[in-house]
Image (cartoon, rainbow, N blue to C red; front, side, top):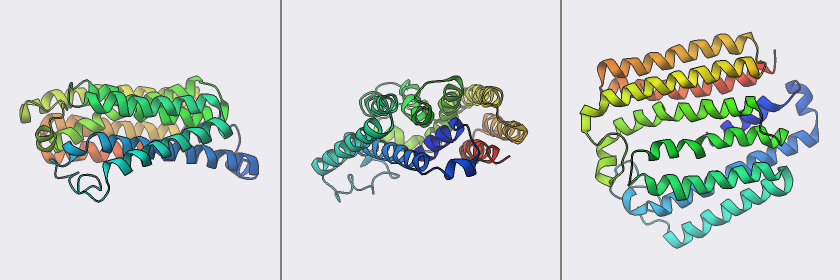
Length: 277
């Protein structure tokens, strides 16, 4: 998903038709290097996150069978692997893309591993800290082509930033027992009684994300198909959040989760399709 996010940012930035872009060997190589660097830094940060949380992952059903908690991989090996992946990925971006994109990738790693990961056991505000590394790859995709931070890139970044809140709140409610056993602060400390506050937060941020996606229509000069599509996707996503507010059960939480996937994937697809029209 991270690579797809970066690819959407990169593709949004290009100022030419799809066929023209792929007729240029230089641009194809540039794109592949940007995605490879993004993939490696993302993978590296995920490995480092798993190293830091191995003891907590052992207590959750959904993570207990991962390589580290199950003992298939040692923490020392995983730490070295994560550092190497992160270093190679950032180096590729610095040497063959541009310094700005490399800096964004380093910020992503640091904010994910050293900010978001430790905060998860200390405060529920970690949810908001986690949105930064989750959204930066979209901006990194934009800067990989433009080497500048511009409004369309920032708007796509905002879409990702706001999208993560209802997405992860749905996950937190579905797996609230697991998170509580592991000691993670995920807005669910009050058990089922927190469903209303989670749903209200989801609605607020889903609406913010919809506004950002609509502004992207205007300032990224995206076409009519994108506009109609993003309106329909936003209506569906917001409907799912309101459904969770109404029912506050596992079924409606899963609907909100699946709607979040459909919403983001749909926006990416619309961005790609728009270049063909």
